[in-house]
Length: 440
Length: 198
Image 1 (cartoon, rainbow over the protein chains, first blue to last red):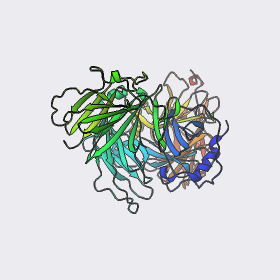
Image 2 (cartoon, chains in turn green, blue):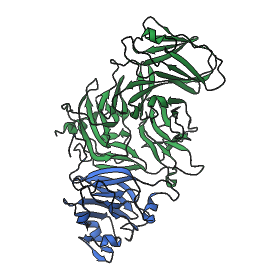
Image 3 (cartoon, rainbow over the protein chains, first blue to last red):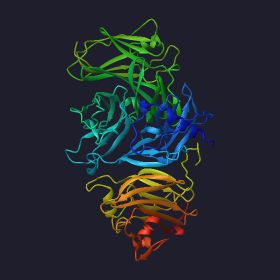
Image 4 (cartoon, one colour):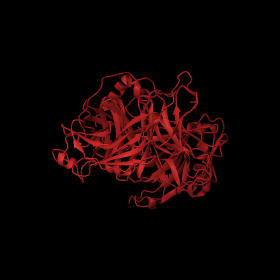
């Protein structure tokens, strides 16, 4: 096959954005000479399990066998071409991070590995154990998630104690590795293993903290990561946050199957968290909102697919690339399916936006229309009469009158039989909102 | 490589890294991989180097820096022609102090070359099957060795092993410093009866 990307990689080495690139370790490969980029012919996409952006048009990826490749896209994120960047099948790797000179960092339970293309032939050929020591390693603690790069170019990875470890060894830790430092920095702790995570450009951490015995949903924790002082890279944060379950993805949204990767993306002026649900062929959308010290917000199904989706990556403002069994695909905004778009609080009412006009008769049907349920998380909820849905003039917003709400509650909107004005079924008939606010 | 096909076939081996269920039976070997009171029963981050035609495979653990098994080519059985026993093959070399420490690996002509230190020894170790799968070549280069060394095998493997350097004394291959530095290869003559492709 024509080596589409050998030259492209060399070119990218000279222009790769520092934003997504972690600082190199001391023995990084020599600097490449920039050259012309190559645009290849379109080819069938491989099955994709992980995507990491190089720039808006290029990404590294792992296929489902753990083999690393590089792919190029149009501005609309249609695949132009791809090629493998490694012959090695890294089957334990779930996350990859781009290092300096297009080296790659990935993880396995016992180490973080950095891979280099030392002879500049467009293939990784040197794989070095980068980090293999951390507190608790001697007692069997292993990497449960990572690496993920933060906004400072540090590598973040989570370490979980060995299953069955005794008391005192039961805390998971989120570590940061910084090439300018000598020691690992502990950024956060969790009494539950951190199974997946993502970091926003503003340093907001989202982590799936896993409670295996709980089958009703999947806990997402949010935390602002401690500030980083480049002049004191080894300084341990004074009060690293303890990760707590802030929001839940109800298991019904994923057909009671585990969630997958997390990815922050800004859309419509809001920071959103996208979560893959590989076994339910869905993409979950979470809109976290912080009120005081508490997190709340809406959770809904953003899209549904015919095949499993494993990977989600923000390529550019408003451009989200997905990877799955069927290969790469952009998350289309202009061809949206009929779904919940947003939930807003108005005085004494909820305004529920849909992506397209609703069928007014079904939306307002007494028994099977848009319904409200409130599950108080603290205090008690006085009995209330089911509100009658009102559809606004554009047909895209349904209004429900609210009873007096407790300060903390799960608000559930159900629309089991709702279809769009054109008769299309809703992608998923429920939306959940975690309410955390002072009682009004 | 078959670029664009999704198959990571090297010139001579398919190279994977996976966590596999434990098959080790020697408590000395497995005990060095997992912790004393560990309840898990797996071999993490194990390299699996597979002959692309016969399906035979070498299993190599970066935790203890050694080959831990040679698997036959059957796709329907888990029969292993060799499972590691006893101490590390270089454990009786002078300077081999403490535990081996994995450094990484590099791909050379489509074959992985494992790099690790073992006390004062700096070791490069690689594997290659003959095209018909009847021989497995295990090559070592012990850089910066200032003293003579030794390579040992359990009895069952010694019976099928020859070496291109050094002198055998029972199950131990005695190697001069120059031979360690220049490199030596131990060839395992595998049982053709076990080379079933199905």
